[in-house]
Image (cartoon, rainbow, N blue to C red; front, side, top):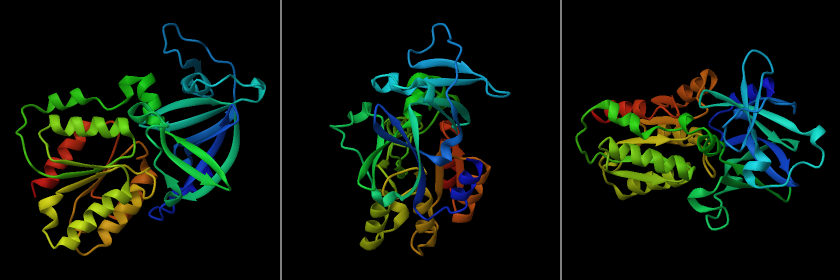
Length: 304
């Protein structure tokens, strides 16, 4: 898995990703390979008293204790027919390790973000839904789950803490326009709420890089001063239609937009991802859930 992860990380800005397909009760789901650190056969776990109902327990594969989330229980699906063949998908994002207990792993596919669509909110639960995208591959539909939302629901202390804004002290109200590209409905809502708390009342929310790019190009076409409409871009990396790396690349290659500050705010930021973002021209990169740091960076870039 490490070699496979390095391979995808070497190709940032192509608007492609690799998905690890897995099954739960004969339904296909997916997770970005960049989040996966290891795949292993499921093993007995130690239950924890008073833990969340979806937490199966903990296990220690090596030197670190990892929390195991029972995905069938979380999704309301029946348990495995062959539990001896079940799999733990061990992940690393938001600087945290978690294992997701699934029924089987199908394989890894490479797909363009353009082949992934936003899920229908009526079908996938609106703000309460856990699907960030629907991918079609070889005639089959794969539900890409919002793993950050899942972990935040189960372990709220790992998510964005809007109260951290209060630690920044008194904040003046300002009309500085900030463009946000974030596909997770939960995280998008928390980011907007946090920026409003920090005084940034003029936020433009888009659900993916394509929507953000369309908004920027409309401003350019109008002939207006871009900075009058957008002073800073805050973008996730994983998004359907156009990811954050591709969005960054296009902004920095545009003569009309290249001076626009771009902050990548993603659960995937690590040393390798940081190098890729720098190569593409990102002005800053921080890991969720460091919302107070995000506000400080916006302050710095919009004060120029």
